[in-house]
Length: 236
Image 1 (cartoon, rainbow, N blue to C red):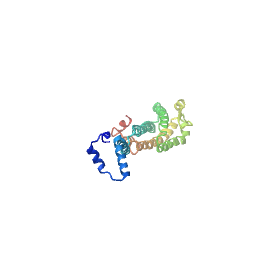
Image 2: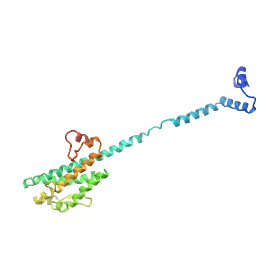
Image 3: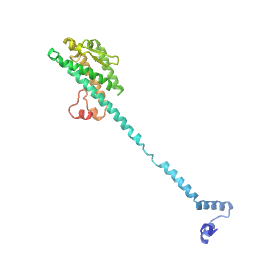
Image 4: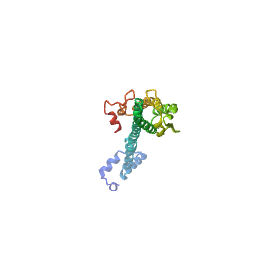
């Protein structure tokens, strides 16, 4: 037996000297010894510690999940930038018209401004849709003001379409009386004046929804903050 297991006489004596006289104890010890000799214990230990390490190992971060929030934020910022650009153009057009000199000598410039307002207004409706609920609400204020001014706008060649966009009859605009043009666009209470004011509120909403850079895009009154480079940085 000693030769079979590769043990010397001294080793065998030492091994069995600690065994009790109980047959079951001897059998159990010999079974354990056999498991050690044939490698079963080693396999069990490896399996045990492998499972333990797997349970305590920190889960690896999914690269896709890690970058997804950044992609979502980037998309939202792009929408905000587009909305801010469109609102800025409408506000500029409306402000220019509300303070224009309504004379025959200035008619061509007025007509050009009206044409720009109609185009930029339609772009604004598209670029401010599905951006945020608060911006959608103020966008509805803008379309409400336009609907309330339907008669005034039609007198200068502007009609409202079913989707709230505007259409311009350039020929009718060129023949419109100066009084009608002035009623539609001159002063803070005119259609242009109300559009300018509402665009300011929309601009505030965009700045609130944007990042820290976007938040400095407009002042509290909705005017452009030109005291620094925030406006340029936001659109880059």
